[in-house]
Length: 361
Image (cartoon, rainbow, N blue to C red; front, top):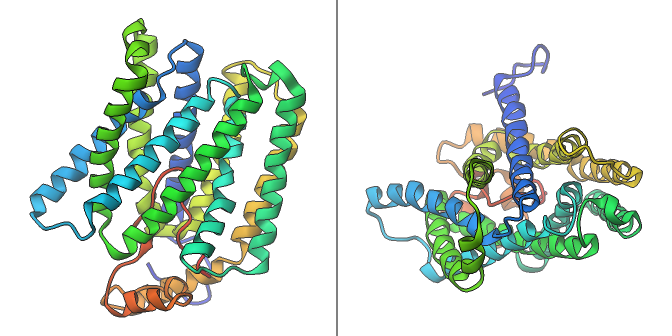
């Protein structure tokens, strides 16, 4: 949708759709956290089982599309196997953390995936960043340190049996999320988004089933299933499936800047849930940490508007669907992919906190 000359008047419909979809994605992230926290409060601690249903949904829906196409895979199957293993364990660690720390801590500490993605893309994809982005990341990390410090000194007010252990699990899970996101970015650049989702669902389901049979079989047998247990269990899987499916659409409409800023509001929703649904007291340092993370992400994303505009101009003038400049200007390999007509990562990325477009500026 082209902007009218002069840029005046009401925001374009595409922008409003992006804003609304961004908040929907943010609420889905908060919903998964709420469901996991509720299951933990009921004594249901089966993190891998929670994710299994989501992978089954992905495998059935996107796998059916792959079968209908009847085309060979564009990437080797073992790439998806490795990605599935990383993604399953990332989900396991983050969901497991709800047993030990609060919903708010999990939501804030999960932002650790941002500096982790920056390091991995710099190391392996040869992406270069401006000083402003590094400054934003530094402020985000300072906010994360405040969360851990608050959990150490707040004791049982942090809403968990072992807050520090929970914080460590979240940081480890966020690091695996970063590895997953960077891997998905690479696979989407040279492959197909539907193939990625379908194969991720297939191998994710297989790995989850094997892990459940070894580690969670007794826990599942001991669960007293009721409506109060089934609803958050299924709700988690549905929210995760919708998140996986909607993120690529948001990236295509508004870019990853909108995605990251939208995901930031999930922390606000988490605090509201903790205060009004659980009637818990929130340590004052959480608000300071939230402010630091918000400022850091705004600074990080602040110089991406010009990149998004360049991408929109490139997309509107290229009938063959070649890449926006910010995705091809850094690495000669990316330039080669663009010249060969391969679609790039604005078609979609993975879970929770994907960074694909704006960091390539």
